Image 1 (cartoon, rainbow, N blue to C red):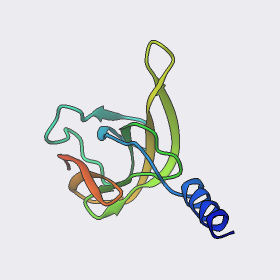
Image 2 (tube, helix red, strand yellow):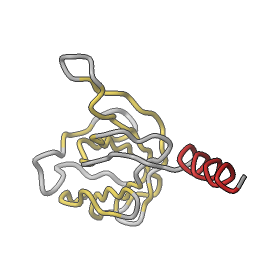
Image 3 (cartoon, helix red, strand yellow):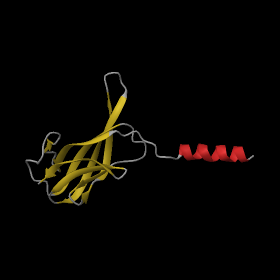
Image 4 (cartoon, helix red, strand yellow):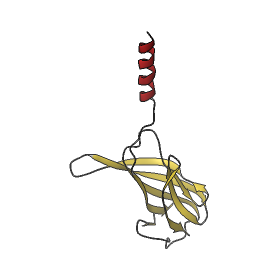
Length: 126
C-alpha cells in the first residue's frame, strides 16, 4: 500500500512539473506600433527610438511547455502576445518565436530571462 501511494505521488509530480529543455533565448527584433522596426541580432544599439509602446520578438531554442520567458526593455516588462513554432528542414520543431508588447518604454537594455536566468542582454534600446 505504501509503495502504491509513493508511486502515485511520483507520477503526479512528474505530470505537473515544469520540465523544459530551453537551451538558449535570443532577442531578434523590435518594432513600433505601426510595424516599423529593426533586426537586433547583431546590433549593440538600436538605430530608432522606441518610446511608449513597442513590440519585441524573442527566439527560444527548445521546448517551453507552459513557461514563458520574461522580457524587459529597461524597466518595462513585456506582455506575451503570441507564439510561432519554428521547424527545421526535417519538420522537427527546434524552437519558438514569441511576440511581446511593452508599455511605457524608456531607454534601457533589452533583457531576456528564463526561469530567473539571464539569456540575452546585449542590445541597448534608445
